[in-house]
Length: 206
Image (cartoon, rainbow, N blue to C red; front, side, top):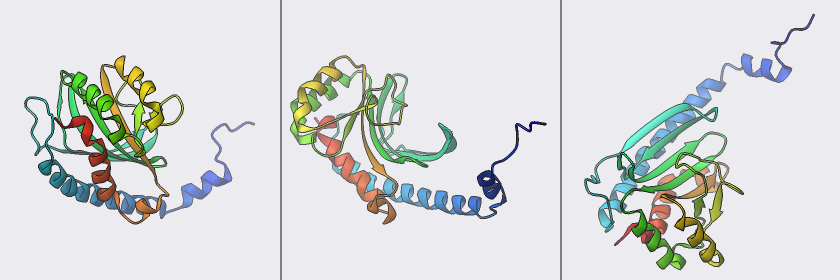
């Protein structure tokens, strides 16, 4: 008789592991602490910056989100600064995606998008070479990176980046930091977030 719902020995080991979810809970609490610290650090960055923001932008607004199913993996993120209003977006997201990476992403859409795209092209070499990537996805909500998903913003790719930008109604620039990176182990997420926000600054300043 076939038993299609049998467990493998590895799965039985996981089923019997009564520590896994306790460890997961501690990790997620630590991630939330890092996001809280990131919010504090970014608040100082935003207050010190001159930003080209949409009408109605409020620099005090932020959002913390926690979930279990970003393509089957747990996640947490901070949106700050945060502005969503219909099709208009001006948001910097710090995302922890279990099994994947910490991702720092600038999400831009709306009436100012032509200005942001022009800023990136005109100030390209101030932004390039800092481990930033332009999303190629047809949506702002795709978080994978690599060939077919993202294009590195490298000094020798200005023409390619400009051509891709010209056809897009929105812009997503992201930095992906592997979870085994020493800076993640050392809890330097607030520093990395601020560093990335500053690297993206030429795109969103007057």
